[in-house]
Length: 546
Image (cartoon, rainbow, N blue to C red; front, side, top):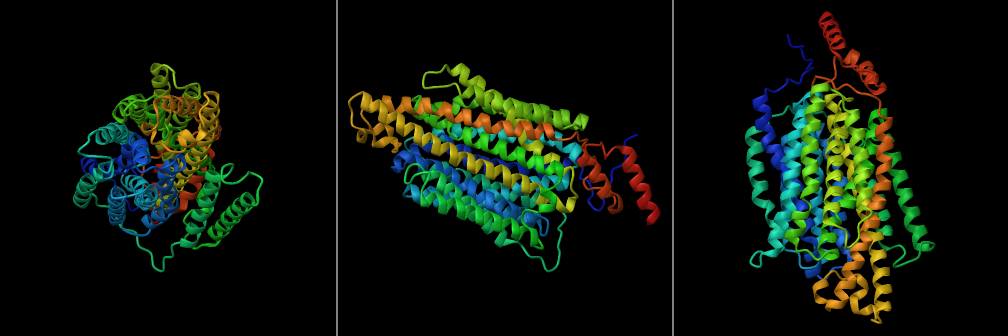
């Protein structure tokens, strides 16, 4: 006899209805992921054709991550207050407009601005898809459906670089179609969601969204990233510019914490963030985001500029990483649904992530592609076992009414970690490449100005001898940023080890209000709080009171 399920106002959906609703949500996720992966292999050519620099290459990625980071908690809070389906559709429209604007960009600066606008929609999609799934599927069952998420992620991540490479290698298309290609997919997603997604709407009177807190967070992080991009280049580490920017960023972030602690509806609820499981999941997500985004963003550049492969070939060479994501997310998701245990998979995944990046840290411009592929596969397995499961661990500890804020808080810090990681590693790469090119050109008796100092990514415009020097510099320097990614990932391993054992609950919501606080506390303390005995007891107590 199957055990009863506590719903507390949220009726579980049938498997068929769940799959129908997931079809639109997974297509939305596919569109959001495709926007970044389709550009990954095309970006060296895009920036080269726009005569952009290495810093601008980094900022094309960072701008999207930054605005997505700033808006994710706002979208998540709105999802706790208003119709989730309408919010997802609004996010799709914003994302779609940003894609079109990016496709018509005439300079690297315009492209960065368009990508920043596009990031507002991405922030909504990355938070709201998780929120919608959490509102439909109990945590225990969510592991199985995370396998579908992993499959979509793998298809988008494998297909994106391949599609981007084919687009820029096809003369009658050109790189602008890397942005236009998502428009029809987004339109189909809108239609599917309208027909299949039906979620209850939560409305509260006199709601206030903490735009001030979100603005202060975005401003503080932006100032830090701008400082990282220009320090040791435009000005010294020990300079008044450094003091002003770092000091100003710290003041802004301190003000943000103060505002969040007093806001009626904070975008990052400090009460949820302070919970043991949530705090460790956030720390793990921050580390995973820094390592994953920061490292993976530069793989396409490594294969094309460092090794001389075409965009299409670079896309094919990233398949091992995506195969790792696909396989591990599906297998781990099913095992988690079967056992209800999640910590062992997060710990194993975080360790594999560090090991894979450490192996990538040994590469240079002549490393065997077999070794590079093996390292990427290990990184992919680590990503597949950690990224979604850290969100799931947090969703398991909060009530359904707080799912949006809790999910978006984890997504916020993961995106923040990715933003910082891309910016920091991009700055490190630019410095090392510039120094090595200057050294090698001097050794060859060629003036440094002949290569543009390594800042211009239009490599094909350079003489063949200088091309070889520039490619070797990029290939050799990339290994160093992967080592930094591995070091950052160690923080994620520590956070995973400190997580207490959790048994995923089988209900959409926490049990009856009178017992939910105690049960949530047990879950945070590591006890299997949501075993069937306690669920039955909660149901009996609720029946007696009614």
